[in-house]
Length: 203
Image 1 (cartoon, one colour):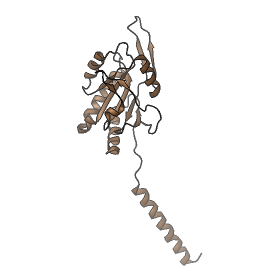
Image 2 (image 1 turned 90 degrees about the vertical axis):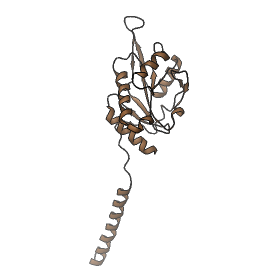
Image 3 (image 1 turned 60 degrees about the horizontal axis):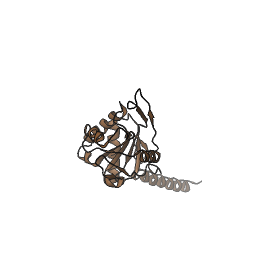
């Protein structure tokens, strides 16, 4: 290769490298969520349940908001109150965007969790939080749709039983699409960061 050809080759390669670098710099990297990104999942698409006010609810009712769905029960000793308290803290940390967060609690213990009990329970954390009250048949269906595990564990008396259940939260974006699965114990700061990313994407 003579000197002139070599220079042309270097110039051509340099131009390609520069163009590639420009393309990489201009393209946006995918967001990094703390929770598990389940965008495009074919499960947990929706629900059709009644809330503690007797009003039928689906995801469409919360269009324009981020929806966090959690399955639990009011007599849960630790996981459920910790999760709801964390969501209340997340709402505070979101500041002006706090109103764009809708927490939805689905009871896995409809036998004891009456609408009155659930309404009082949600009020302990945030008055805007909603609880849904499925029938036993509805619970079986929605748990299957969301891939949620729950099981009654007998106690010393017929009413002192506990409920084993999944402890994660399902997060839907402002368009009602399932985006994230947040494992229990992730902490408020991580969840706040994820929700801000989703709000930015939906802006």
